[in-house]
Length: 170
Image (tube, rainbow, N blue to C red; front, side):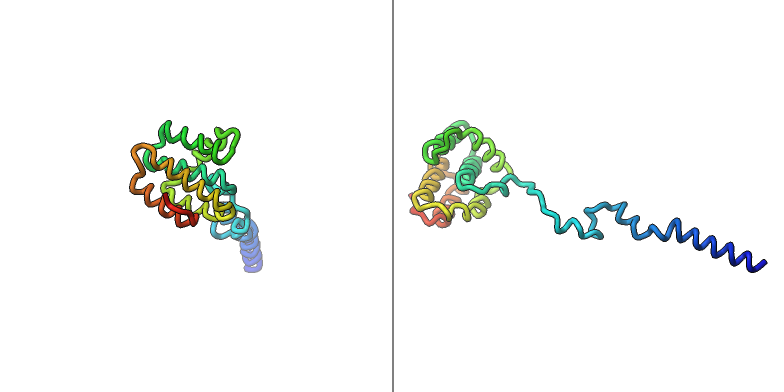
C-alpha cells in the first residue's frame, strides 16, 4: 500500500510539473510581449522616427521649416506665409513651393522653440556656400520684420543664427 501511495504522489508531481511548471519561463514573455524589459530583442531593432523634423535632410526644407517656426513665434499669418513662399520660390529657386511649405509647416508645428531647429539644422547649413548662408539669414530677418519687427525671442534667434552661420548681421 505505501508503494502505491508513493507511485501516485510521483505521478501527481510529474503531472503538476508537466502542466504548470514546464511553461513558467514562457508565460511572462507571452504576457508582456516583445516590448517588455525582460526581452531585449527589441533594443536592436531599427527605430521609426516619430518626428517629421528628424526626416529633414536637405538645406531647403530645413530653411523653410526654420522660417515657419520663426514666424510662428510671433504669429503665422497670411503675410508671413506669403513672404516665406515668395522667398522659397525666388531665393531658393523652388518651382512649386506649396508641397514644401505644407511639409515644413507640419514639421515646424512639432517644435516649440526655433533655436532647437537652428541647432539641429546647423549641420545641413554648413555644407552650403557663404552666399546661401547669407540668404538664409536675410530671409530670417525679413520674416522676423513682419508684424512690427522682431520679438525678443526672434531677435535672440537671429543673433544665434548669425553666429551659427558665420554671416554678417544686418
